[in-house]
Image (cartoon, rainbow, N blue to C red; front, side, top):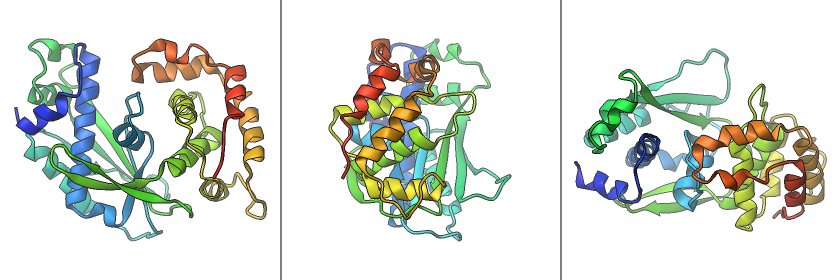
Length: 288
């Protein structure tokens, strides 16, 4: 095995097949970030979302996707050369993945791509114990969605963070308070359809536990862009608390718990979840 891959895997205590699969996903995510750094992606783009929180701030749950946003609106931004950089980076470490753009069925500001590769084949590349790869169907694919917002809402602050493995490289990402603004926007405005995304609620608790405030002006910009706020009014933390209490009153928390369970290691982390619990937490919410 590549020594750099070995160093990345030493962070994990891997026993079960699901733990190996999650570790593979995270290694691929970090190598993708490295490939994007080599292609100068972060000169134009910032990283945000749950995976940014996991990799750079130690969020104690696994995350699936890679979410990015342009620093300035640009309808002509070309993702293609950066996707090739990701594919080449993964191939350089012995992985076999396709990295392809997703064709748009409806014209939106979101540009998407998928990193896809056979789970069994790529687990063998990271030294999965003999026989454990047979827990996965021979045709099962590991998929990581990449999304980039080409029409970003205004007011986000960014910072540059460094990863040391497999080589030192830097990623531009949202500051914690702007990451939190994105999460609060998802909680308030996401269309859940038939599936409540419990990961949003888990992350909300994590942010509050860390004492991170919400970047109110960036949150307001996001809400204005999606039609959930009147730009003539200023969003205050008191108003935000009320909006969140109303939202929590509509949630099926059993469904939320079910969604997040595959991504966490301690089921008791969500034992208290319910409207009363989250409504009490809202009082701890602060803005900046």
